[in-house]
Image 1 (cartoon, one colour):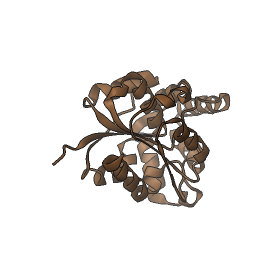
Image 2: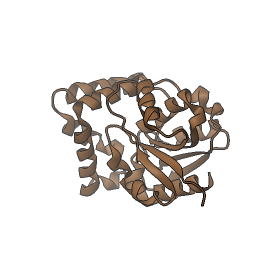
Image 3: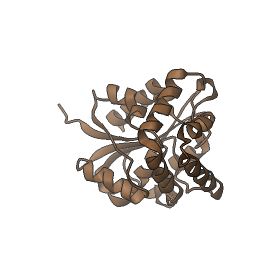
Image 4: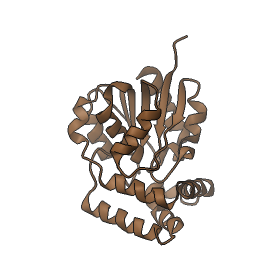
Length: 234
């Protein structure tokens, strides 16, 4: 039997391993799955180094949102270690001034003890409108944010707002690459993913219907099936 490829899943901000619950449970048949820790650092470079320090010599890498930004940085630091790449509900673009201003406002509110309110206010952009009344989904998002906590919220937002433009480096990506997003992703919409897929040689673009930004949680079966196919066949 062929040795299974290690798979590292990187969560979005401010979420944790629970984002990947379905994938962790069901991809274990085809890969050795681990979820990276994206807390404790305020730059993409430091977050990437921390993941690489704990990673096996060669692995498949899947990142959602901020996890995708960290994935681009991992490719800058150690491209030879990434056997396969999945970029999910993310962007290769840097922050706009408007996005940075919004992040700074969020940090200020969270430092006033208002993390729960900040997450609640952001939910209409995080998930498909039909999922806003899904108590299990919403409660999980809030619980993850509380576990990540206000200090790491500020660190992660700082890393995100200072991330570099990854678009010039897309043509240098040589591993099998899946680019995936929800059709109704309001934060990183499909055209942003089409841009990535057009820039990466041989990349495959997949759009999940009736789905917002948190596709791994909103449409877990579809995302798991796409990732399984990517792991097995590239």
